[in-house]
Every structure is written in structure tokens, then in C-alpha cells.
Image (cartoon, rainbow, N blue to C red; front, side, top):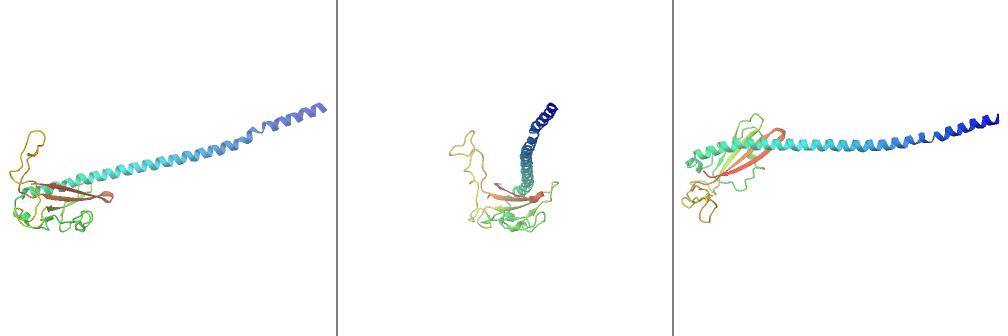
Length: 211
């Protein structure tokens, strides 16, 4: 009888010893939760990084679209200037044509109130219809002179070069000649275009031409 009782006591002791490994499962669960939280934070950071990259790519696309739309205004202004380059119409200001016979010292296209509301025609600027992508282009023309009047006078017009002083040469530029032929007595014109588009996109492009 005593031997049988001792046998049962040993089995009970053996059962209690095998119970210790099961108590360690709580530590494994805690470590797993920490790893899961770290992986979740890394996933959130990756998602935010992708969102930022998509946003930057979209902004670059909007800016490129605005720059391309500005080319329409620049070309429209260039055709006007080239058609009437030597006409007396350019001697004086023309509000309806968005034209100033002087360079308007201190002109800053970014803070100029003359643009008016986006995509709304305004006096003093030339407004083109919105294109298929929703970009609206406006532009103004400034003649690079100190004062109105005949550019051959003493009104301080900026010119590319005097007639007869510019030549052409084959190859590199030399001190006595220009590599390209420059035209003479016409003043330089500055074209400033403003483009407004989707997502409150605003772009400014300036071009200087010598007709």
C-alpha cells in the first residue's frame, strides 16, 4: 500500500514539473505584440512616404501643365509684336492690348494686382480662353524703354545691337563678331504670362524677344 501511494506522489510531482514550460507562453505573446506594433509603425511610415511621393509627382505634373499652357500666351504675344514691330502702335500704352510702352520699373508679376481673378478677363491684360485641362493664361507686354514714344529717340530703349555692327562667323564667337546675326534698331520686348489651373496652380513665365 505504501509503494502505491509513493508512485502516485511521484506522478503528481512529475505533472507539476511539466507545467513550468507552459507558464512561459505569456512572454512570447508580449514579444510578439511588440514586433507587431513595430511592423505596424513601419507600414504606416511607408504608406505616408508613398502618399508624399504621389503628391510631389502630382504637383510637378500641374506645374509642367501650367508651363505648357503659358507657351500659348507667349506665342500669341510674340505674333502680335512681330506683326507690328515697326508700327507706331507700340509707341504708346494700350490697355486693351495689355501693352505698356515702358518697362514699368518695379513690376513684380507675383504681387501685381492687375492680373485680376483667375480665369476671369480683366482690363489691362490679355486673357486667353481656358484650355481642355482647365488652365487659363493671361499676359502683358512691356517695351523695354524708359518712356513712351519713338524708340529711335532719347527715351532710353534697350536694344540688342546697333544696325551694321553685328556680323556672323562660322564656328566659335570672336571678339569682333557675334556667332548669330542680331537685328538692329527695334527695342526689346518683355512678355510676362500668368497661368492658373487645377489645385490652385499658379505659374509665371517671362520671355524677352527682339523683333
